[in-house]
Image 1 (cartoon, one colour):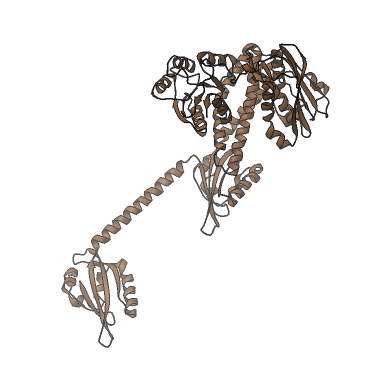
Image 2 (tube, rainbow, N blue to C red):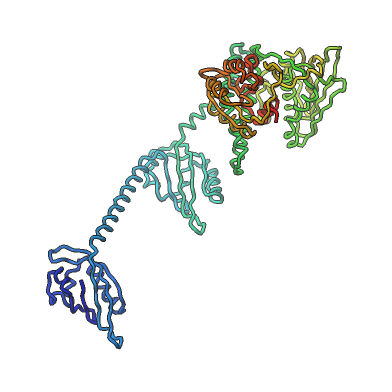
Length: 638
């Protein structure tokens, strides 16, 4: 459809298609008559547009709804162009109108659909926020709350409209406020996010424990524009933790009375300790692997704290287990040939880092008369030495610790050796010395709080010394250091019979060294966490690892593949580790594969059963990569 207007903008001509569409005559449409056909919502805009563009004398386009002869409106785009005389004088305008109703309807439909989806999204978001258990708070750059989810009413007793417009810090328990503000300041100066556990004041007057995570948002210039905090009520969890802490205190008090326990109670303690070692393997093993990854400074600090705490817990468990085994009469000596100088050297080296941190010295002096090769229980001997040297290092803040070995008497078969551990530490009063080797006994309270411990270490040393037909004692003065000593008889060994492995092997040749060229190993373990830890540790040592969860699957794997070693758990469904080992040893293919027990049990009889079943070695859980490597090096040629 086409129209013409004069230089003033008044319409002077409409073509027949326009007139047919409108159902009007030219006289009815000329000048301003045509405006009556423009939709009233578009009319004012059209007039304003025409007036402005006519003054400018430029081409332009405009969209509007135009009424048809039957009363319906359709959308048109009007493209308007000025035309001039030969002397460049404006003569008027020509307009070309194109029906775009179908296009506009599709656009409007899409807009309506988008609006409906937006409305549905808003309703969904509202439904989510209305039903969230966590309390979400949004603040501005001054930490003034701008939005709160309805769950705030259940958590703090406040409606969203009551809390909106107030400071996020207004509801925090006064004693916790400095801690929370420190966390917020750290988030502002660091990565912009953080977490904290603190208390909120409930509207009803009681305290609510909260675990909160926060995220600070910045604009392109780096200025804070707001923050979002997610708050979870953990009051029930905290109450549970407090109950557990109370129960732990009850347990500690019960352990102090364990001196009067019967053998049945000791066996029960051993069972409990065994059950604890299995999850502890997950904590220690995973944390050790975590520390071998790339961590931030704070993450590494947290991981090291977990690792150290887990090892401290494990040391306490070991003390309790050793004590209970001795009380139950289940501790047996394992006599092997060994190099005494090597044993002392290995034990002393364990304290290298500690003495370096404390800036004290640790020296050893061995009488040349002491035979190099002896027969005895190296594990128990090292346990006594580790306890006594550890105590000396622990209680010595300056000066030195000396480890001395002399011969009290000897004959052609035996030597009565005296081990002396001397320190320049805090010393012990006469009163404390009288009860020092009693179980669950520690020094005075303040010293015990500072240095820690279970009070079992010296009692275990005494019982182990007596088990080896020896005796133990102490000489000390308060403030002048201490000298602990123990005397045990040792059979003189034969250098040609020096044991290389700690446990006897059932293999025919005595030593089943296998080349690491066959670098695939098999783990037989039904505990998912333990299997994962062992897998990652062995992979770090360069091995390819296959994992199966029971003995039957292990036998099938051995038939199909070659392995340079098998790491076997003892307690499994379908077929346990001892039965599986017996089957493996009866096959030609599995006869010479080193089988190493991986188990949480540390009972001597369990070790014996593993070796009698045909296993070569034994590692108690939790194990470190270093301990694992030492055992592997005994059996696999690198």
